[in-house]
Structure formats: structure tokens, C-alpha cells
Image 1 (tube, rainbow, N blue to C red):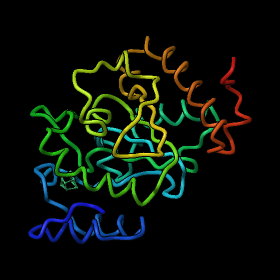
Image 2 (tube, rainbow, N blue to C red):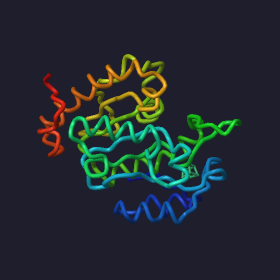
Image 3 (cartoon, protein in one colour):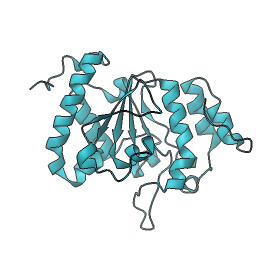
Length: 226
Ligand code: SF4
């Protein structure tokens, strides 16, 4: 059951929804201003993909393109993510629901994307938790340090070089296989990470085949065992 706040009618109305479509509609119509990110955004970015999918992919927050279009992971990072997951047979719009820690774009003084502040992320986090509960995924993919930090608050002083490519246990999400991956934006900044990422998605593919989670994965060109 999501947390309720007697004095926060916006959140209560959104978090009392019982279906994903209802949640989505209420969040969008709320024009939520519960944290300061609400005042600068163009669109609340709820997601992209299929709420009935068994894989939920969790990123940091919307960037410029996502804010403009109101859809998650549609910019360069999103295109790269689509390509990486397509290589193991996943169609992100069919096989995944892609969401973020915060639903509104965070910008620095120069107008560039920045990670959300802890207070912003903590305020928005109940929406993400509710999304996950309504989707009931079999697998979660945490993209990058912000996603890992808020999904696993007990994990302190970690490095993505050590965590990326690993399956981890999250006490708050029992029964959901959770893997940490590099954020595609990190690959765009540092192409040297691409080889590691490919090794990681091969591990992911192998596990998805074992779990029987996504039909296209079994016959994808990229072999998990190669
Ligand atoms: S980031 Fe989340 S909590 Fe903050 S205004 Fe947007 S939807 Fe509301």
C-alpha cells in the first residue's frame, strides 16, 4: 500500500489508483507541483512502452527531448537504449515499460540536465513505487547511479564500475530480479564502456531466456552464450 498523507490530496488521488492507466491519467491531469521541478517542466513524463510488459527499466529523469515530447527515453540516450536492447531481441515499446526516478526535467543554472536533488527524488519516488506495484514486473533494469541510489537507499558509496552488470537483491521488491546497467548517457560520454555494456546485456539475455520473460529474446541474433 502506498504512503498516504492526509494533507497531500494530489498524491493521495494519484496513489489510490488501482490500474496503471488510471494512475497515468491522474498524474498527467494533476499538473503536479509537489516539488520544485514542476515549475520548469513542459510535460510530466510518466513513461514509454508497455505497462503490461514484464520488464521495467528505470532511469534518472527526463531530458530536453523527453520534456518536449512528454515521453521517456526518446532522445539520444533513449535511441541508444533501444538499439542495445534490440540486439538481444527486446523491443522497448513492446517488452518494456521505461520509467524514471523523477517525472519532470531537472536543469542546472546553464539550462543543462542535472541529477535530481534528494528532496526532489524523495518527493517523486512514491509515484515510481506505485508504477512498479501496478506493473508487477518480473525483471527490473536500473540504469545508472541515480536509479540505483534511490531504488536501493541502503547501498552507500558504490561505484558503477563495480555494480554494472550485476543482479542485486532489493528488500523492498521481493521476487523481482533486478539488474544494474550503465545509463546509455554514460556510454555516449565514454564509448569505452560499450564493450562492458555488451557483456552485461549478454548476461541479461541469458537470464531472460531462463526466466522465459520475453519471447523475442530466445531467437535474437546476439548470442548470450557467445
Ligand atoms: S518531479 Fe514528480 S513530484 Fe516533482 S513536480 Fe514532477 S511529478 Fe511532481
